[in-house]
Image (cartoon, rainbow, N blue to C red; front, side, top):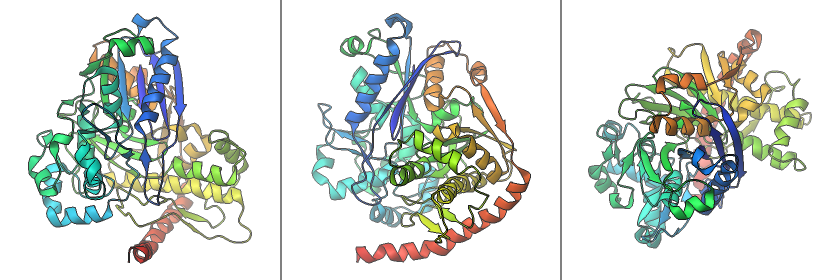
Length: 497
């Protein structure tokens, strides 16, 4: 069983050890944005969703038939604060949260970029969990002091189900700031400089293929699995999502497109000094590294559009209807251009103050042209991200995530990037990767056979004429950002004063 605790919902997949899908299930929930640039999630939502999908999937087979469970999660930023008894003290400040801007500035005064990059392979930004922990220490000192452990989503759920506390190397690396990527340990040196207490972080590091804990008798009865069923902590979701496309070796570009977007390249050495986010890979974390750029808001801006302009439809049916109604909108959306930075932006721009921008509105602008421009913005963001890897990335990319279900969006990404886009038939993405990793962990799956599990259902080639046109629009997309970034910097400073 593979379980993916996502930003907006938890997806689970039950598979045979030969790679055949038995059943899938999803449970939705929401995250909170109490202020502009803030984003929080409740641990109870994650736990309730995970237990619900396990109960549903376990009903398809006998208890003894479930031999392993792999659980990954969204990047939980600060993590969930829990006390010594395991009680939740507050929400997690998730990856999307951009409030720690002053703390980011403080980091730059306390630690040089050169030292941070050398030790962690990352820099300072509100995206990272360590800057969020600094914010909590300053603005919620009572909560910070009462917290015994800050737990990533998957670590929190696994501790509930097994009683064991752990952190995947990928989640530790993505916390950045206080994780030494050279030794794969917490950096006491950096933590002391930043004023953070290392003991408040999980002390047991695990790979995605070693048992993180075993389901307790109490939970086994509730979930419909055997007592002692091994559970694997498979880390940050985009890592298993990449494993779910068959990547267990370096060199293949994968784009995960859901609420956010992550474009990744797996390498044998960290791609330092490229503005990328870097951490140990979900598979073989001691020998492989996950380098990625991405967008804070990808599918999230489509969901926002549906919520505001197609209120009679839900988040699933709205995009399908809009895809059909906007199918004939030409490249460039009749002179509309959208910058999709609704929650600022992380790698490769690293800009907390920029915001979503719509250029070219007129009295003739239609809802469908605007929707098409939103989709083009996501495609431009994909192109911007993969170009940070350099030119030697081949002619193909693999696309996973909810947006890959939109034929229109897949074709648009091919046209904008000029790359052939592959999509997978399983629809499993991160949960598929977590199932694979759990299977490898119990030696039921051979890593060399993983590619056989991945069923490519389509290869979408770019339209040459549209690609030539999109090359011009992409340059305007870049120019537009460069022209507005200083405006937003100054604009955001007004309220601060």
